[in-house]
Image (cartoon, rainbow, N blue to C red; front, side, top):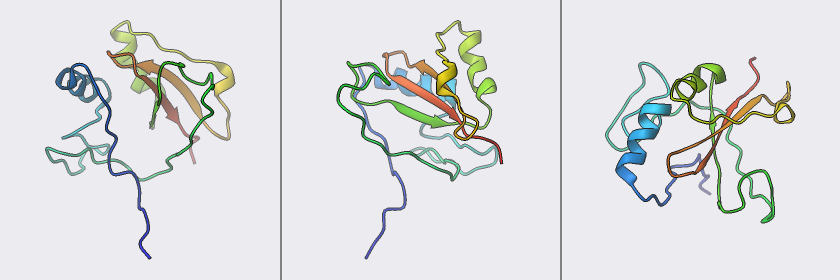
Length: 128
């Protein structure tokens, strides 16, 4: 029997896909032609990611964990939350943090939104 090895892609609708692709590449280093490792492989179609945990979890339809007008929220695993947030701060973009989101056993969290209003949760797992 075969086994699923991971998520092979994340596809979503956008009003301006080319502009949104540029924003994700420039702001977060995410998307085609990007690598999570400085010397990692790149190609024109995919984003080379670092191995690690991925949470796959449907939420109740009435959750208040993210905006009710959105069907999903992207969660990106990061190695240094403060460094990843620096370009958002420099651009004057909104960053949402709440003390109750953070837990030493789970990690630190922050929320940002892409130019089309899609929520992005940034997660820094605990070191070690």
